Image: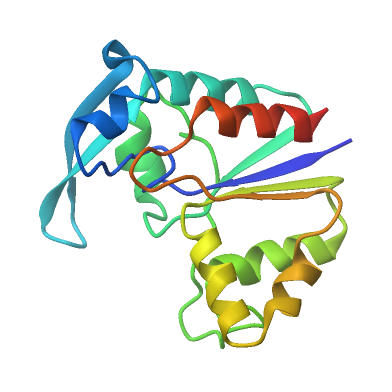
Length: 183
């Protein structure tokens, strides 16, 4: 049995809190780290907030023999180059999904959803896990456009699309869903 996992950064690993309470009510205070990363594309440092608990649990996924991990983030190669060294090397060797500029939008009008859908359709994997804080918003947009069926055809048996809260990133509850999904 094989599983592919697509992981976003902002709102998944990098929590973007409204207040410090957003972080400490999910994971213990002592697990949180905060550092700036200089992003060449933006010309400014970006603050990263992550819990070592999230990193440790993603590392456990990474170490499974039946799991292939991919970055699916606007960070692209910066995920491995800039973030991985901060978080103990997690994801250093993961490939990343590229936006493929110039490629017309697919059925889902979002490059991430289009790539995940193509992966599902390929049949190469028994299970597909997609973790991105924007999934719920995208599904809602499709539904409001009267295109909810496009989304429902994508999410079927063997697929888990997990949309954590941007303010907290992945939570223990999210990891419980992931563990049940991978059984």
